[in-house]
Amino acid sequence: MKSFWKSLLTVGALAGVGYLGFKGYQRINEVMKISKSLPDYLFDLIGEKPKIDLNMKLKSISLAIGLSSEVYENLKINLDEQIKCYINDYYPNLAKLQVNITKYIKANQLDEDEDEDD
Image (cartoon, rainbow, N blue to C red; front, top):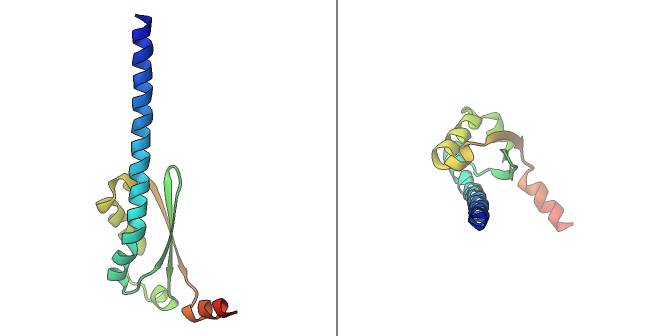
C-alpha cells in the first residue's frame, strides 16, 4: 500500500509540473504572437506602425509603444483602452495579467540613420 501512495504522489507531481509547463508555454507563445500582431492592429487604428517593446513578468505585461511626435500629439482615441480590449478579445491567457502601457515619442528616423553612419 505504501508504494501505491508513493507512485500516486509521483504521478500527481509530474502532472502538476507538466500543467505548469504547458501554461507557461501558452503564455510565452501568446506573447510572441502579440508582439507580431499588435503593430499591425495599431497601424489600422492610428495610421502608423509603432515600435513595440514588450516585457513579460510573472503577473504582468509591460508594453512601451513608440509613436512619432505627430501621431502622439494628434491621438484622438484612448489607445490604452483599445489595446486592453484587443488583448482581452484575442489573447485570453494574457487577459488575466495586469497590463501596463506607456506611450513615448520615438526618435526620428533621420537621427538614427546619422548615428549608424558615424
